Image (cartoon, rainbow over the protein chains, first blue to last red):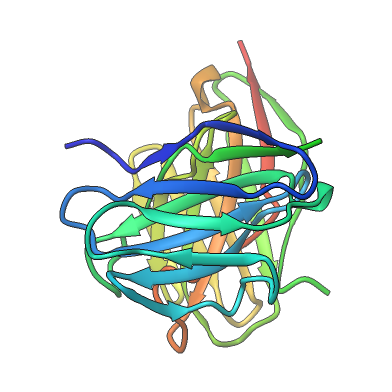
Amino acid sequence: NAGVMQNPRHLVRRRGQEARLRCSPMKGHSHVYWYRQLPEEGLKFMVYLQKENIIDESGMPKERFSAEFPKEGPSILRIQQVVRGDSAAYFCASSPKDRDEKLFFGSGTQLSVL
Amino acid sequence: QKEVEQDPGPLSVPEGAIVSLNCTYSNSAFQYFMWYRQYSRKGPELLMYTYSSGNKEDGRFTAQVDKSSKYISLFIRDSQPSDSATYLCAMSATTDSWGKLQFGAGTQVVVTP
């Protein structure tokens, strides 16, 4: 059973470009969470999705950031018109249901904005 | 003030010593407390999970929660060089989605042979 798969592992973008980060949850998991980790800071919650639904996006910046988890395919975190401050490690986590003690994290996507 | 405070370290200990880690928090609504281990360039891995106050032991790891003091601890006995990693505390309130965790900044631990 493969773990949470994130790709790409490293993504380099120039200011103003779009970044698309993909996350395939573990098999049988229908709950996906995105976190961002800035240097010297802990992980910060961004958004919680279930299939075709955004449940909690209270941690998402109001502009340029969006997330989806379609019925088929991976969850996508999209950042439009990236700026240098978006450079960070973005982690995806999945669980089979809410109120489950096991939250499995992927290895992350390191986004670098030039 | 951050909701969860954690000393970033680094904390350097000799092999075989006890590693003591802790976090303080300010939100009384936190009920679920976790410790994650994160190796360089990897995702966090759940080590210990505790609901409300009390102690929990799993092998060389012991987690303690003192809700009256808003203080949680993780102890690693007989530390090994393979324990060298960053340790993150995390917490969740019952009013929040389960996976909406508040993390500490992480403590870097180095176990020297």
